Length: 96
Image (tube, rainbow, N blue to C red; front, top):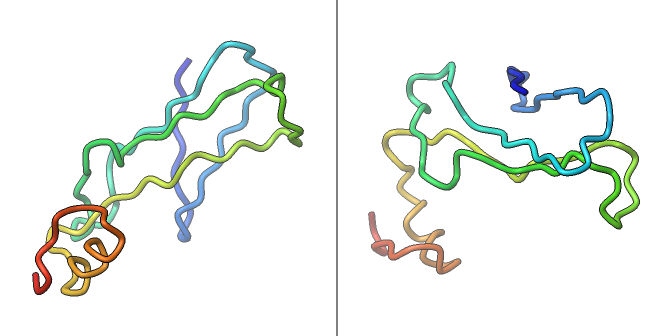
């Protein structure tokens, strides 16, 4: 199955599933940003997987949340290198 959704002005989207899909997983993937200055897609940060079953041992009310995915600007902000380095997320120069 395939469904499309558009985010609201805060970046939230909603896709309704009509029933339990026991062994299925929804893969959410970025496709196109409405903002050309923030339209870069980074590999492995452009998708999230969401189980579509309520029979997984966790008490849930029917809402599932995907891990955050986002578009990125072409030019990173000056402070990004230091932040990434502080969290040991990647080899970033101290003064990008």
